[in-house]
Image 1 (cartoon, rainbow, N blue to C red):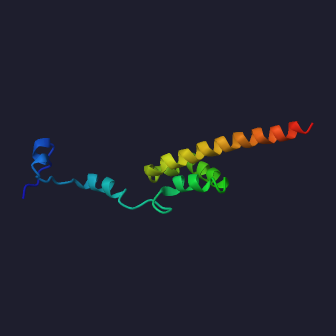
Image 2: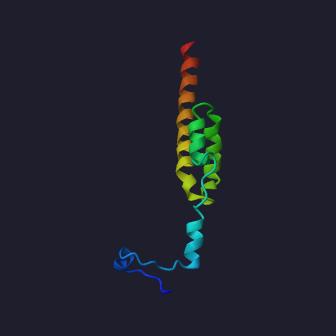
Image 3: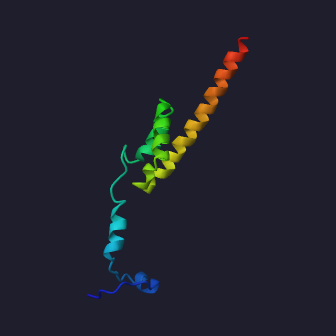
Length: 105
């Protein structure tokens, strides 16, 4: 068996296999496990749950600013979406409260 590492695309297209070095193997294995919360990740789960309970958006925002996504970069987009949703919700809430307060005077 040939133990060399192949970088030649032509060899790879022929169906020949190349040896994966150990340092590459650990990076690949990091993302083998599914994400928590039904496989969609904490960020996207919080984003969806936030439409029922907006506090979930704030929870995910705190995780985003604490760089929770460094544990698993796949979480970053969901946590960022939740942070944006929390910002939009906060602005809408402030505008709503201001309109209600000043419309009665």
